Image (cartoon, rainbow, N blue to C red; front, side, top):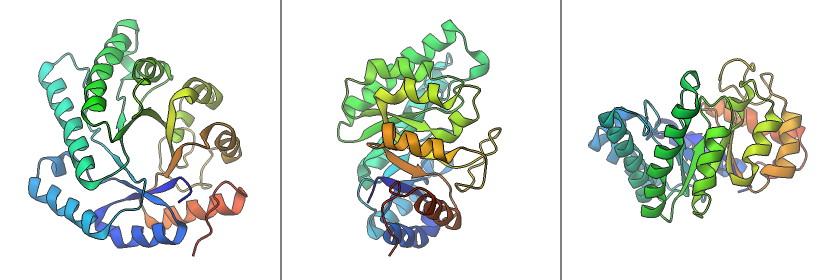
Length: 264
């Protein structure tokens, strides 16, 4: 594998395995961020067993819980449930044997301000620090979600970068629809980057389109990949197998040496 991954879901697992085998890519499991799955132990177990029986590629990752997750909430009950969901994600990841779990900052840019931001930074740091210590063999990557700037991610990362299993997941498409130039995101987050999410959009809405079908500048991405992202894993974050194949072929055909694995 050359550091690239595709989304996997258990309902089309055989198709994803065929793509992984053909293109030598790993998985980012997308079954376990759904609260309905997290509340249904039987369904959880069914999905876990299917992955264990099928086997997952080396260095695969998993997207953790993110719907309505607010570990920094002023409502103690909401914060408590949010922390429980993150710990559930880590326990599932431990059972399946993935390399890393991706969580979102989930900070609301409409509430941005020094007091709000500092509360997000302090409580998110404390929560993730507990998980990093309790699960030292699993990486935790924190992703920009609604973030308008890298400020919150940078401040959390300054405190957590001492842990070898911590890193940032830069969602390139999320950053592309912010008002901040991509170069500002890359420069600010570069010291902490471990993982990248890519898909295409119209630079207005997060559409999760196949690469090359929207307006994101992929020549610029290729430059960053060679200078800054080369040590990172990269997820093609489209769900349909057809879109994944289109994206992988786009990288292979348009950027010589970027995606080095030839399909079988």
